[in-house]
Image 1 (cartoon, chains in turn yellow, brown):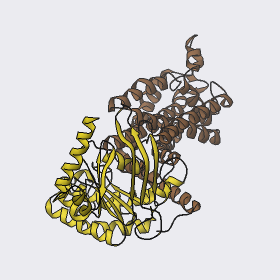
Image 2: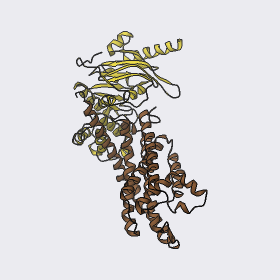
Image 3: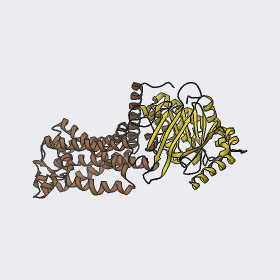
Length: 260
Length: 264
């Protein structure tokens, strides 16, 4: 499937992706998913559906059992330099805070840029830019352990965007974030999207997904249960809101699983 | 962003490695009073207590004054324990706080991640070894008879213990595991590895058992670099140290390549 922005490859092409954990849990079951270049894509599902496993598989943080992941045409799995090309294009804001306790806000951004091959001058410039964008100026030289929960969340987002990735993955980015900050974050993410960045978002706020996402996939038991535009999903499930679609799609899948 | 060429990707991955090593170096230098000063002071106290004080009651060991004999062993012990402790604690912390994910997701090859994380322990060991040598050698009149051997043996032994620290940092499930290896494996082996005495003076079977202790060869090779004399030839001790270092480094690279214990 070509990218939406042109004839290039899709931002993300996942084929028959399976992940079975060491304890036997099947988190992803032959999952197929394609996200066009430039899309604002929502991934919704209940806890344990496989959202974070899917995201971490794309980011190279999970040992995938089988399948293929291509990021803008670059194979993300396996050895050699090819997966590095894929990783360079990804920016991940994880669900759980994972900041380096020895670094300040500025250093966290600077070193992250370095890890992603950004030159010192560019990383320093981008770090200052992100500090302003995410209103972290007053905490610039504060160690990450001394930040409030909201500040840590801002820094995670700033870090994920520092190297200007083409595919930004936001795993529950607004969990525990106050309304004002949530609005600010979405304003900036929308701006990034308008500039051509592909966004993959997981969230439990369905109204947020409905307002932001052009395409939405519902995931359950490691498989995609439904995928369409918000309007297409409402029409298919004869629903008036995404909440209703969610209940019908996820509930229907659950009934189906129980019947099987 | 246009598609990167192989050469650009390779260059970028080395830049990433440089930044990771710089981060580990920053950790060492930012905590310098704990990472460098404390081990240097405690080793110098060993010199004062065992060398200058109790050493007066011992005439010569291996043809050298006692304080001259023990300094190379103390330098070796301080460097090796620091290389291990630095990396095991740094990596366990990174796993515990999960910021290792930011490194594992970065565009670096597995061996580059390993090297980047290993270099922190190497730097810390070299700072400690350098400081101890700079202070202790002129103070006690310890020569450096074979500097090339000293550098080669030190680097190989440090690499071995820095890699061991990486491995333990990856396998450890708690801080106790990290301390267990340090207190119940490395320290005892160092003490019976000829730091304070020549194993040649031991009766059988202790002399043979000492030769089965890998730390004995490292201490002995480093001592030969300082004093030009040792219990076994450096033609034996240096290759053994290098082989063990290569095996340990290979193990740590394997962990990063497979993601074993690092990725679910």
